[in-house]
Length: 213
Length: 207
Image 1 (tube, rainbow over the protein chains, first blue to last red):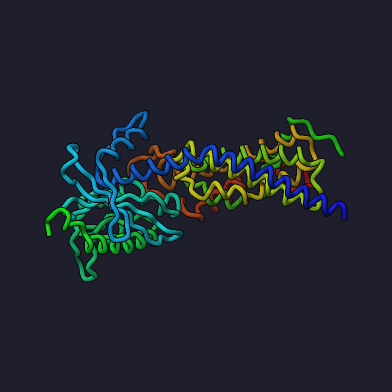
Image 2: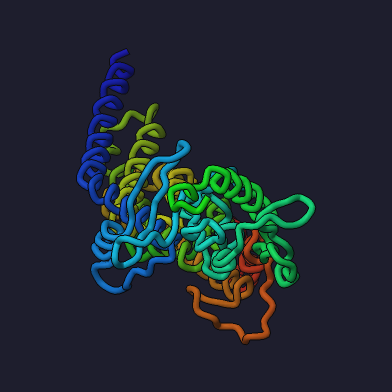
């Protein structure tokens, strides 16, 4: 009996000690992790808007400064919309909005940038996903993402979508882009949710705000 | 309690003769999951070495007081704590690598080798030999993962650490990136090593 009580008390205090240490480590690093995530989001937005950040030391500071100068955040249709401005801070260069959908293994989060007139895609990036490294995860590589740059926001084909991911090397018609080799499911998932999200963004487009409607 | 073996023997055993993969064929899940790209394998290895050395040390330090009945709970707590610390540190200081590894760091918790060494060695040996044992076994395991990753990335992508090593016309073997590729490389490697060093890896009793 005594041994059992000792086991319980011992486990209790040991757990207390270890969780305290883990909490302390977490607490000490929490601010840094939060900043990392914030800078990451800012970098993703800038990337989707096609605004170049100079690389090198102090990149994080450069990202935050540039984001502050060139991007305004607003809420629209239940999601955040980031409006990008040119160097003068007056002319709108484009809009970026977060998009998300189910991937093969877990949710995929994307950031999509479109030009000021909502006529073409400026950039797409995938800041968060849990696809297979080396296969589906290659969606984050420039080789795949760069294909979206300049994609016209015009539906084509019988199924009326903005883009279609086809077997790599066989993309020849408008709206066709190379899928990711060996990651058919991930490619299909991207095709499905990005088309849908583009559709809903275009439908509610901030076109009216640019006075183009 | 028998005296612990000398450090040289612990290192030789952990790294080579009792290598978790060659000898026991343990830790296969991580072997399959993280070895398709060398960079991921390296960080995973570093996390595993840290976790294993310190878990063995801690379990050994607590060995006098821990009741036998709840020792596995204690080991799990120790291992999980170190793994979470590794995860937090990577997220805070190496955000890019944390990105690439995603859920794999957490997978160290379920790596049976870590708990295996705590159970087989650290709970009945003094702290220093236990630390050495954890370190040596983790290094032995990590080296094998690295060899597999080198083969898989070279054949599957034609690159090593992202740098092209194969000629331009090389067609990547996509199967190498996927789980079956890991099975092929692992099987061939274990076979080659055991065939080449029959004395070291012979079944017990046949040595």
